[in-house]
Amino acid sequence: AVQPQLSDFLPIMNLSVASLLVLAALTKASAKIVIPLNKRTNHEAVDRELLLGLNDEFATSDAKALRGGKGKDSVVIKNFQNTQYYGSISVGNPKQTFNVIFDTGSSDFWIPGINCTKCDDMGARNVKNKYNHTASTSYKEDGTEFDKAYGTGRVKGFYSLDEVHITSTMTVEGQKVGEITDATGLGPGYRTFGDYDGLVGLYFAPNINTSTVLENAIAQKVVDEPVVSFYLNGGNGGELTFGGYDESKFEGTLTKHSVIGGKIQVQNITGYNLHNISTGPVIAVIDSGSSYISAPSAQMADLVKFIGASREGKKYYIPCSTPIPYFKIKIDGTDYELGGESLIVWSGGNRCMLGLQPNDTPNQWILGDIFMRVYYTVFNFQDETVSIAKAK
Image (cartoon, rainbow, N blue to C red; front, side):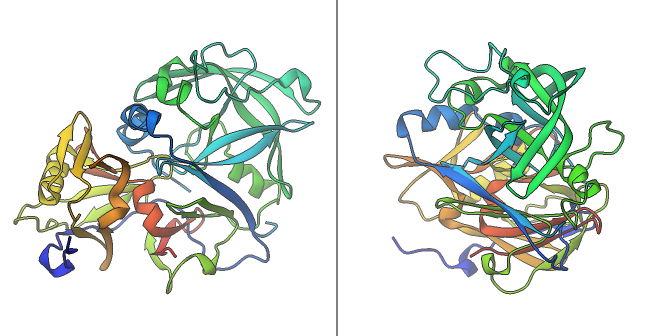
């Protein structure tokens, strides 16, 4: 099939950012802390069930805002079917290892506790790694209740204090960790199909008594700059960099956008010109804890109609043989192009599922991993900026 030309479609969504999330120091620190982000291989037998349930609590919930040394460090990120990106950390002494999602949209940090009886379903593909605080010499009791609401239900447990090892060179002492005893609210997407054990929130949330790993790392002078950079891809995974960014992971130069209050204040929106349909002013949030790009139902319906997709529940499908047109998101005069295969997260036979999803929040877009796979993002908590460039 002949691929469509940009000029044939080019719906434009004018997303003029007045406020964005937080994170993009363009000054380079002396060293980096790099965390590999890993990717799971495809398992078609569970992909559709996974995608129907997993991460809906993140993608469709109210947008989670982001606020806001010794050099930089990076973590490898794994990618499960382009919907789960996670890396490995360790907690306690001796170290206990966990696969976690690094979430720029929340400040929560939780892992399943050894006594969690509702963290795995019978027949689960991967049994969760569980934290045993009695085996850790660096553990300190806290006991405060942990009770968080997600889109599909609640996650309950209690807080503990312990060492957290993000990498071999990045250790945070006395970190408050949610020790989960009941993960029923996350549903089968987590308990049966999820390849991650827990969640590490990076958002600097005001008026919250719990400091994030990044906040504590800065206070303990483990990291110089309050900067986090994400490189995601549809291949083996990617990297999360603390304290700076990696020029080898993006093309051209980074474009910086201001952020106020943790959200991309999309102003002066005239619409994305889909058959003269106007979005009106909207807010957008770049969120690594969300798998998809989501928008208010009416606006998303206009977009997928233009693409030619059909809706089933909260998912959109398109024949895999159908060329997917491109559209542009405009932020502060800079166009960010999306479309083609970058929007596909699952395929089975001749049916492809798109990484687009409706939400119930008026005039609010969430730019999740689908956006971040295409664009390298640098979040700066001190400057309250996010910088974006085309990922390699």
